[in-house]
Structures are given as structure tokens and as C-alpha cells.
Image (cartoon, rainbow, N blue to C red; front, side):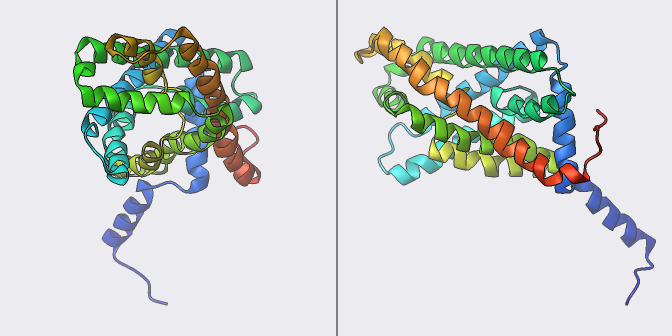
Length: 283
């Protein structure tokens, strides 16, 4: 066996190791972060929810605009998904919170390190903030006159009507898959301490979500707000359509997203590492 006696090489190896965390340590880090989020003042949580919803609204505008004249469906999906990456990039590096990622507080609540009332209060407040942020940018889309562009209008309507006309169970199961990727994109950033690696890992998980069009309750708030605005541009919609979007699209997506992040993601990794974890994780 050959020993490495060069101390400089040992330091380099140590430095490389410190750049990443093991899967177990990544879970612990996400667990701690999720538990600490529950203690964030609700006003701050609401404002961070607005910023996340707004960043997603910006991504919607850019993605719809970038693909408005594209005929090839495959290229359309790739470009749409690539442009939409700006949302999660802004959320992670500028600051923002989403219902979908905050659902990972569920396991700390089961372990009694987060009070249930605090969990539900946080999720409700952040979701309201997400809706406000998305709605603001839908209204700004109208105010900026972007819907006067026929190609943009048709593209936005195609996305909105597609979500409106799917069956509720499609949104439910789509929501589960969605949040494995979206909450997973936040989860995976704690596997490394390198900023560029965080960006690359995040984009690798968000891209398939955006390309596939999985149902995300926060992202859906943008087309939901646009729905009545389409009447101003010759596309007839009703109050019933708006209500249907709420109970047929958003409600099943809400439950699907929660199950995907809280149970499928955090719950699975908790079961994997539970015997290796201390009885109480110090926050």
C-alpha cells in the first residue's frame, strides 16, 4: 500500500470533501433548515412568499414570450423549460419561500420539533404570499400590454386552458411528481457548499419539471389570475371557469404537492436514515 506523505495533498483532499455532504448529512441539514423555517415570523414568511410568487411570474412571462411563435412541440418544451429556470435561480440566490418546499417541515413536526399549529400557519401564510406574488405579475402582464401581442395571448391561453381542462386526478398525481422535483431542487442544494454546484444541481431538477408541465400550486397562480383577464381580448371565460380552476386544478395540486414534498421526499429519506440519526436532532 502506498501512503501519501505530502501534507499539501492531504489538505486538498480534505478541502474537496468539505465541499459536499453525504446523503445522511444532507438530510440532517434540510431537516434543520425546515424546522428553523417554522420559527420565521409570519410577516417575513408572507413577504418571502410574495417574492417567490413574483419570481415565478417573471419566469412565466419570459417563457411564454420566448416560445410564442414556436411550432415544433419538442423545441417549444425545451426552450420553455430552459427559460423557466430563472424562477428557482432567483428564489434560491435572492431569497423566497414556497409552499412546496416548506412542506418539508412535516417530518420535524412528526418528530415534535415543530408545533403542528406553527406548521399549518406557516404553510397557509406562505401560500397566500405565493398567490399574491403570482397574481401581481399576471396583472403586470396585462398592464404592460403583453397580451395585445396575438402570439403571446394565444400561447398564454393554450397553457391556461390546458390546465383548466385536465381531470382533477391528473393534477393530483402530477402534483406529487412535481414536488419531488421542486422541493428536491431545494433539498439537493444542501448536498454541496459550492454556489456554482448548487445552481447546476437546482437546474437539473427544475428543468424536467418545467419541460413536462407538472402541476405546481404556486406556478398555477399566474394562469389562474389571467383567466378572467382573457375576456378583455376576445377569449370568453366565466366565473365558473375561475372557480373550476380553483377546485379542479389548485385543490388536488395542493394535496399532491404536499404529499410529494412531505412524504415521498422527506418521509422516504427519514425512513432510510432513521437508525443513523440521533433521537433528537439539534437545531
